[in-house]
Image (cartoon, rainbow, N blue to C red; front, top):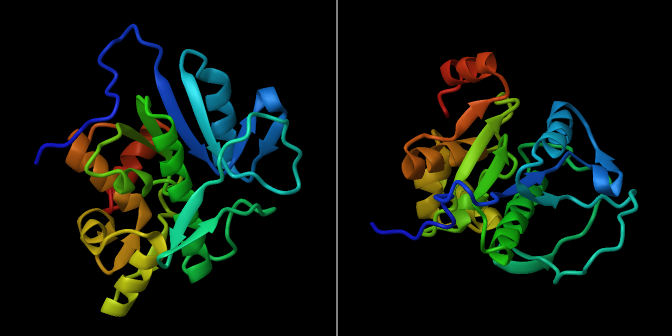
Length: 230
């Protein structure tokens, strides 16, 4: 099947444009920091080290921080259970539970927000995925393919929801606004809806498995051996 490829960086002299979506982040220019654990540390390092690229940040705006005035954009609309909603802010960047309906709504909202940002910035050379949180975003854009890389910081957490019955399949797909066909092809691993598997299978199918790395060489090898979803 022929597909359109978005922005492969074929010109090595081109200033690369990278989109990064982070639930934990430090934006030095804005003097903002939302850091819970190791992912926050890595996002801080990325912001300081990646000075040779244009970075587009997708962040979760939390209500107890003051953000500097900037150019306003149109609200981001997401589809949950077939109904449109606008995103609201919250104080904690992570949901309390990982396997419930509320967490599924949270991650569906997050991934759809990433997709909207990609669509609003048509020249994206690469989307840098960190762990499972934003792994579903490339699936929404199919049949267009956005080049991706996946950095594994903690593959123990993968973003899982049960798919044991037809009813669960219908409910989860409706929450995430994804077709059953795409779910079965990219996301489903065994009897679970697995966000991390979505990124791994997307990169496997569309990039010949090129673009996945652990936070260190040792962790990358250990993750490859330990987690069959990869």
